[in-house]
Amino acid sequence: MFWVRPLLLFIAALAFAASPLVFPGFNGFAPDAFPVAQIDPPVQPAGYAFAIWGLIYLWLIAGTGFGLFRRSDDYDWMDHREPLIVSLAVGIFWLPVAQVSPLASTAMIWVMLVTALLALFRAGDMDRWWQIAPIAVYAGWLTAASCVSIGLLLAGYGVLPETPAALVALAVALVISVTAQYRLHRAPLYGITVIWALIGVIVANASPLNFAVAGLAAAGIVAILALRGTDTE
Image (tube, rainbow, N blue to C red; front, side, top):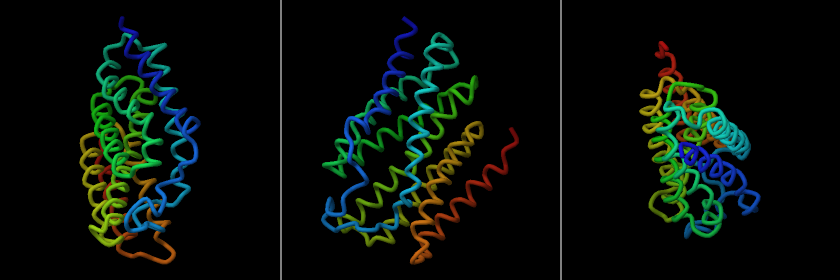
């Protein structure tokens, strides 16, 4: 029965990728989904950055498919499967929940992030482009997206003004990403994906210039790149 978990993971990846087709129409939280309308929140990356979801969906399908058909009984592939199944299973239902409840969807995306990071840390060393790389890109984007949700909640529920809320969210994202990348030199695409999101934040805050938010995002990029520069592997 060694094929059961690989099969479940492949099915979860397919269902996760199909969720935008089953639950269409979500283009981010509506401004009036919060008590304090979030019309152009500085914490949110520019719209083009979200195109990375296409890459994530395809790479997860390819990687889990390779794992099912070529590495179903390989011990190097076994440890990451259970947490990744949990992450993708929650992700299947994220879109319909996000359409009605920012609070519930934020809780869900943090479950997705924690389990995705656990899967990334548990991934083996074999077949890096099939096993590690898709999880790294997925976890990297979830790191950014989960912290964006925190920033939206802080501003949307009036806990903080928009710019301080964005700074708190970015600070949390940088702590998580720098810590994770320091421990995961073998997964550079994790940090690169976070950088993609941070560039999107800079673009979104360039006109008019929000120096504090764009500056912190730029500092985060420098920190991740400097960390990668210490990699000797």
